[in-house]
Image 1 (tube, protein in one colour):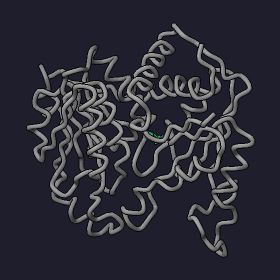
Image 2 (tube, protein in one colour):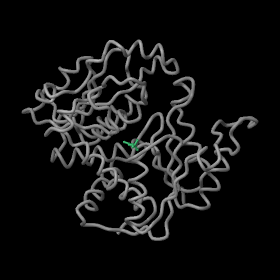
Image 3 (cartoon, rainbow, N blue to C red):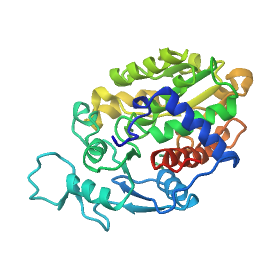
Image 4 (cartoon, rainbow, N blue to C red):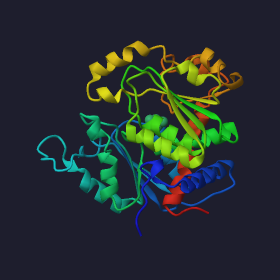
Length: 338
Ligand code: CP
C-alpha cells in the first residue's frame, strides 16, 4: 500500500480534509477517541517551534504513543539536505540516511524546514520536507516548509468553523502586516486554502510587491472554485477589513526580492502602517469580526495589545486547535481512529 504523507492540505481531497476537521471537533468535545498505543512520531526541527513541537508531543502522549524530538546540529548530527552534495564541510549525515533510519524506528516523521535557498525558484521546491517523504518509508508530516504549513491550515479551518458557525459565504480577510524580517508564505497560503475550502469569500490584502507565488494563488483559487468560495486581491487593507467576519494578519516577505534581505527591507519599509488595531477591528462586521494569527506574534507590530487582549482575538483557541486537528491527523495516518 502507498504511504500517505501530509505535505500540503491541497494535496488531500476536500472530503478527506473535511472529515479530518469533523473528527477533530469530535475529539475536542470528547465525543470520539482513538489509540496510538505503541506508535512513535519522530520530529525533526531544523527551525524553532513552541506550538508545533508541543502540540504534536502532547497529541501522541494523549493517545498512548510517544514523540521523539531531534534538532539537527544540536545533540544530533548536522544534516546535509542538498542532493548530490560533496560532504566535506560541517554536515556529517545526509538527509537520505537520516530519513531511511528514522523511518525504521518511527511510525511517522514530522519535519520543519524554513526556506534556506538563495532563490525562490529553488526554495519553492520544498526539497527538505519532500526529501524526507521520498526516503522515509513511513508517512511524513510537513511541520512548516517554504510553501505550506498544513497543520496550521487545519487548525485555522477548525477555528473558523467553531467561531463562525457556518463559514460558507462569510468574509475571510488575510491581511499582510509589516514585520522587521521577511517571513515565509507558508502560513498565509495554507490559511487561505483552508478558508477557501470552507466556501468563504476570501480577500487577500497586501501592498504592491508582496504578491504570493502564482501557483499558490492558483491553488487557493482552485480550492475556492470547487467549494463555492471566491478569492479577491486588494492593495487596500481598510477596504478589505470593512465588514469582514474574520481578519487573519500575517507578514510575508516579497518573493520578488527573495534572497536579497536589504532590497526586501526597502520594499517593505513604507508599509509600517499595515497593522491591525482596534479601529480596524471595529470596522469588521458589526464590529465583531474575529482576529486570527498563527503565533508567535510581535505585539504592537503586527497587531496591537488592544486587539490581542480584546474581544476579537481567537488566537489562543486557534493555537489549542492545533492539538485537536493533529490528534485527528495522527489517528488517521497511523490507523488509530475509533
Ligand atoms: N504556529 C506555529 O507553527 O507555531 P510554532 O512556530 O511555535 O510551532
